[in-house]
Length: 255
Image 1: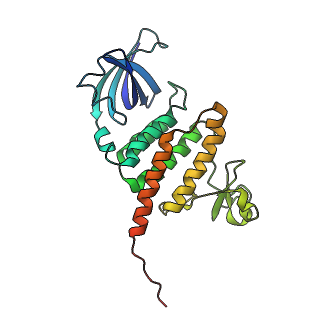
Image 2: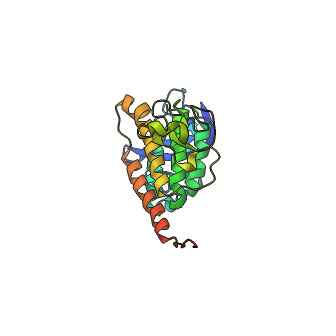
């Protein structure tokens, strides 16, 4: 059996003295693993770095076998992704999220999203918002998507301020006010029709929101912990956003 596709490197695991088992994300075949002979060679090590885009050919005698990868570089962006803390932690954290999916289960939307985010991840001001949206997409692909388009109680699409921790649905400010202490905050930049970018406060609320549902629906039932890289990414992203906010000039209101 054989197939060929573009793939994004997620990680590698040493096998013997010269080979590695590579883990990649493909558009049509999902997360896939395969043996790379001489994967520890000087020529292959720069290629087999997380975040790089490669053209991969997979061969195996039977579909269920591990199989062997042959790889050619397409876009080597790993060096650029090592320049900022948000990118370093972000690549690791997104790889951990994709490992929640069954191997060889296609998720073309997540592949496309991953490819776009990796192209912009080195920008700390954009990285946090992109990562939150990726977490929401993973929740959706796992069957636990949040409904943030309209109020669960009234059906309105304006002034959405909360998310019900029980249903994962948005609630408008008026309907949710009596139970505000029990609700999760809906960051304005995630609300339906939002046009404003995230700031430090809303980004922190977004991480709490996705973290709550990831823990409840994914990590706790499987008896595993959220990847440490996520905490590192959150700290780096909030530090970058808050630093910019502090640098903004304060304009006095006219009397």
